[in-house]
Image (tube, rainbow, N blue to C red; front, side):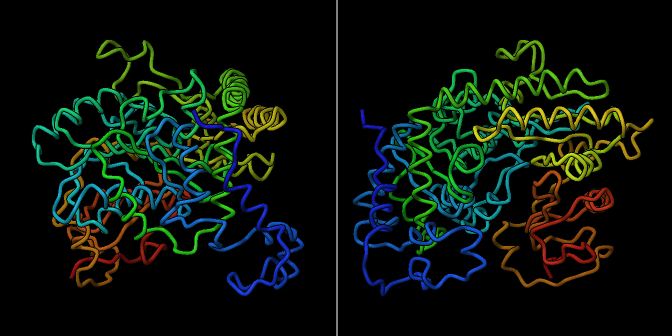
Length: 495
């Protein structure tokens, strides 16, 4: 057992920030002496004194032998891994590295169609061929959940030469599929299970939270420590266990996708967040769950509102419930507002502007909130009071726009891949008006928010249903990212 009280990287950074010396190295502001006054006024000088480069005492992220190595070993023990890497380019670079380390050009990887855009980037960088599975879809709530064990089993029977399976656990809504069953099936083919656990870094620290991905049998997991724990934005971790993943390949892949000038502020925040959870994690998560349960209980009692709950009866190996929805992260609160005659976008705008309550994201029928260790009882009271007033003063008779936008996307085979994402991304392309792109091959990533899932990727055939979906998202107030023309008047296609 290691001493989880230690913060080797944080201590080394603190000592070097306090050391009096003449700095003739990067960064150019020289510990804040050259920083602009408006920025210094906002952040203070202390943060810039600690904004240091790879000095001898601070180790090297790409070849750690000192305090970074010590900090990563402590993190591996705290999170239940055999080896851990600190990430300064967010979970994005971790997902990319996971694919690069397990798949080469032409190799198959099985993954859900509702993956994050970082997985698409990993396909482009690696040249891997995606075998997409549609996630389980709830037509009542209009929400896509997890892929199911049966879907993974069927895909592996059809593609036994696949090099890896990647899944999302939990989803953005906090929904967890049957990861243990998926791990067992994947391991029967002696290939690794990779998990995008960006929103589940807290799972390992409380028994009333869903099972952590590593404990459920994952070979590799990537966690955004900044999303739900106490690290700074962009600070994440990649963990592995077992012998199906080559740690050296992970290290080499990360060298391709991480900055060669890593921020020690981000790295130190990972060390500090790990110590905090190792020492106080259960207490902090108990308090967070208490706040979340209070919010869930009070909001569910407001007429016209409902909150996302685990299907009843719970799923038990095929008896009741749903294999795509086995557990729910209770700190993730999704409120259905369509019963008030409002869209999620309208409710989001009202809550933000009138009551200073800001959601994580809005969708057509729902608002989703992240309740974390940083929230307070006052936050919960403000959230509940905001919803009480919303229901009383802003209720309408009917929902102006109501149809299941996701249904066709996730319950049909409307995504047809004509070539690998890498081939299409680097192919000769042209930009055409949106109306002229039907049945053409897409050459860019098109990611509508909501739901923040790439609707088109390089190599996929553009269809009328997809174009209609994109236009509906825009008409409702959503926005499009990833593509060259975010106004969506044009699309880039393979020439």
